[in-house]
Image 1 (cartoon, rainbow, N blue to C red):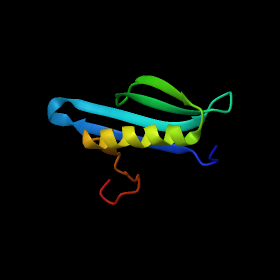
Image 2: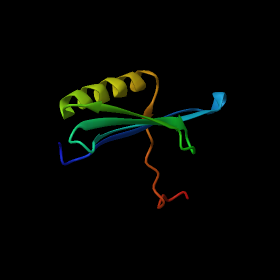
Image 3: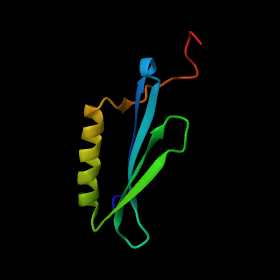
Length: 90
C-alpha cells in the first residue's frame, strides 16, 4: 500500500439552479490488507452518502479512482477554490 494517501475533493455549484454538490474520493487500506476506494457525495453542508469498493491491489483501486475523477470533471466538478482568511479585502 502506498504510504501517501490518495484523496480528491471536488465541488459543483450553480447558484442559478440552487446546486451545491460535493464529491470525494480516497484510496484507503482495508482491514484485510486489501485496497479500498471510498466514494462520498452529496449536497455541500450535509453528510451525504458513501460507497466503498474493495480491490485485491492498489492499482485496480487507482484505475477506478482516475476513471471516476475523469467522469466528474466532465460533468463540471472542480476543486474548491482556496480562500485565505487573511485576504486584504476581507
